[in-house]
Figure 1 (tube, helix red, strand yellow):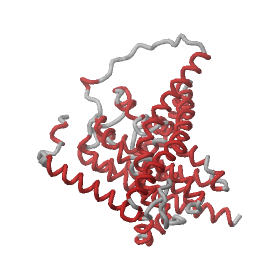
Figure 2 (tube, rainbow, N blue to C red; figure 1 turned 90 degrees about the vertical axis):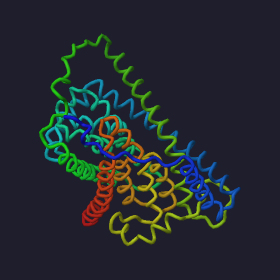
Figure 3 (spheres, rainbow, N blue to C red; figure 1 turned 120 degrees about the vertical axis):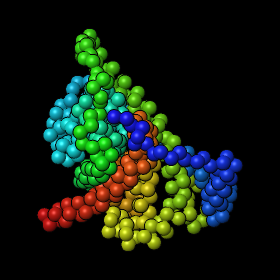
Length: 393
């Protein structure tokens, strides 16, 4: 099937260079003025640098340590067939839930154990694509993103029990369940778009592109060497993932923290801010309260940040819990939305491009936005139901 006919016929007109430069300067000056007017120019730059440094040392390195350990564990599971076993167990669920073949469950497992783009290495394998129809391929971006960094998010939230001073396991389990609900919503909406575009019968791999049988290679290494190699290689991938998280945490979280924190007297210390996001959240609290049920308006900064970086969003949770601005209920919503969205605005474009469906990126983003909102709302009401049942004994 010729893919060119599905691409938009009109070409976009490029903005003149001088105009784009002018708009950029105006926006940058406007952002700096937003902070500098209430904080003072010197305090603004001091807070900017100090907050970025604290996030790098206190949050990024902690997340990287988790990523290294989880990367090693996931590589060990892959090496000794645990992922294959999980694939066989999860396969019967995929068709009724997602309208995807059982092979897609392998993508769910790999992205849950690592990050969103992990599904791309599977989708690039023609042997993997054989299980799919053409309309199902673009939805791999949605289902992969919905489970991306799942184990890291879960582990990080579990590590906040000391800060929250309560058992967070029920909240985290509810968050994971709600992320699954969000993934179903996102994937199904995306499949609704692609089914109309490609039909239900077009194969994902043309007959001329069918892969040739590969020769099986025997592993000559002993058990000990296989274990050590898997642990070290997986840990190395964790370092790469940890480094990849740093820009999102430092840049996005710094700006969001300065927009979220409300400070009366500015000294240039870390985590000071102008409290703009809570003011906006208060204005639309009549929507946010029934939808997500946050304990404070400042908690809305976590899902907002998760749009661009799940790592940055996670970095905000300890401060919210420590200051009493979030509770176990909020952790359930945080887990669901951080896992389901997992920075999709920063990964969807490249993922759709890698799959060969860049022109469908807008539909993928729209589908996943709805899916993330559904995940947060589901976590809110499921946790309330669980808490009610528990209270009744």
